[in-house]
Image (cartoon, rainbow, N blue to C red):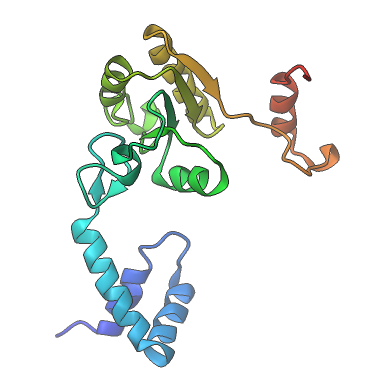
Length: 198
């Protein structure tokens, strides 16, 4: 018996994070009832993306070429390297800041219990970059989870061995935030990493 294309569409949509049975149904019905042309464009774009997008050979971000736009740009500062956990972090930094340096994407964080060690994060590639490129500062932009902090410590050690300065993204109370509404761990971290006022 042939499988039902509608059921296959629902199952395919459920591979997306946060999309359950009801969300998949709403999406499928929207495309089928109101936007078949959008569905066709989505199908073509997904096919192209899945077959053409790969990892940059230098920073591990997404690209269709051997090197991504940031790595092949001569306008980026070669002496500053920002290390992030995922391509989503690169997008966030690019859209919210004026950062003009380069990146290295870990594609995760150290987590021995999950079998994620230095090799899975491409840290041998990063070590080569730290040794071969004129990097003066490594900005560590990992998340403030236990694994993210352990990864940050490991990265700091790598940079220190090469004589490269290390900085960490500031963490703590958000701009416009009120102390009484800030969770305990964020407040404790902000208090412990306070800086002198200039």
